[in-house]
Length: 337
Image 1 (cartoon, rainbow, N blue to C red):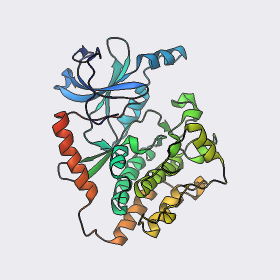
Image 2: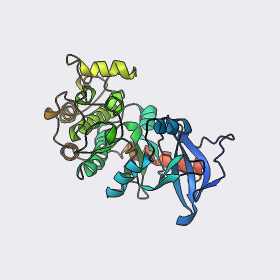
Image 3: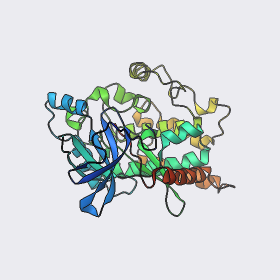
Image 4: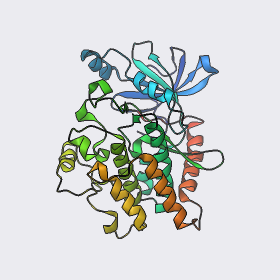
């Protein structure tokens, strides 16, 4: 999905008013929804990201007996998390043609996935700083017993605040669940469809469910990708079935190529060890929590001392912010699923 507007003359919603929202432009589309920039008239013309379910996907849900708005579950989680690093959902409902929607915070910036596609690997200090911000956001979920279950670069927005500081925003709580819930359809998704294979923990692939430590595994996979410029299973992206088979084969190592074997990657031993621990096949051998990952990253950065040059992550994100503002005249980006 492009970062910028993808208006389509054939889209019947564009320019229309539906349930109090003026639909301004199409931001992007995913497998099951389309996201628009819209203006909410009842809230002083607040700009929002309006995520609208695909009509075919909604018919499939209804045929399975799911008649409620699937975005409402995500909205409930959004309302109870008091952390600005978690995307806010303001309202859910139906547009005039009966499709479900969620009106969300409009987030300016770009996904970490898009940034990595431009930059490949990120210098280790920046990766550690960014990883610490993501881990902090995940820790805020875990503190109230919410497991994200779909952490990946595509669900991390990177932006710069007015003071120039780098910020992250976790988006898409669509398959998040409460700690006490079983990993089944009652928790929003079938067990065989949990997460994105390149970031799914081995125990989840084996049908043993999810836990805070499965989110820690995904944090490790994100950190590895930032440092190595490739996913944990290599630069190729095979299908879900082959990745799941790899995860289930205890003789296969994770990652397929450890950071220590990538000659071009300069990463302190302590950071390599942390990434390796997060990706351990045994969840009991991983860091105990996302907060522990955050704290260890902060300790590694502190022990290394200040960088000699400004963070190129800050410089790069600032350039993206300026470009984004010019291209979209204030519109935002939100990932569709």
